Image 1: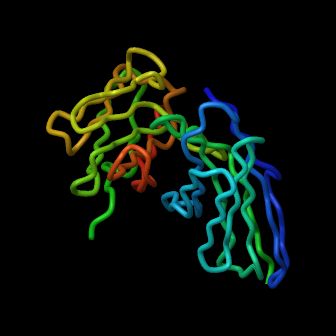
Image 2: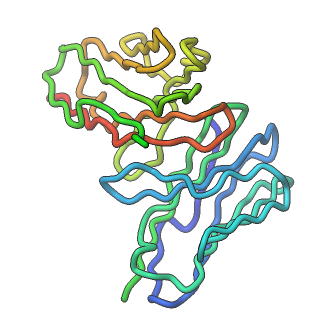
Length: 110
Length: 113
């Protein structure tokens, strides 16, 4: 079992504020780093698949960066909206297998 | 198009009974994964298929758990002689290839009483 850690476990953000949180993963045998957005009672939904050191990906107001040498990725939410409230899961891909972190639960207050 | 579907969505069974959980992946997706997800945790890998071949079953907790994908499409996860500790959300995911993003099904919530 690979150690994928996410911090913080939860955070509360005021609507309109920006926020970011971290995923740390083993720096050896890296294949890809996935980010998923998960709303309770729904299925996790893929946000990004990142493979190269220094990768930056963006989807709307959400973006992510990747540092494979030091083993971390940041997810940023710019101008948070209530619909951004969800748990954000990162997963380290070692060959084909995904090892998930426990997630960061974001609550955006109107 | 249709996403990944799973059935049943909810299953309540008595301890000692066998259960079979079904996953219908997105058509054409080569890779299929089974995960178990405890409350408040991320999905935990159980097993992986590439077409009909079970490439990795290292995440299956013990030999009461088995999975098959005989024709490279629909997959069944079977738990024999269920125990209360087997209660969890069981999710399946499919992917067009081994390295791409995974598309998750809605899950089967299994409760063993």
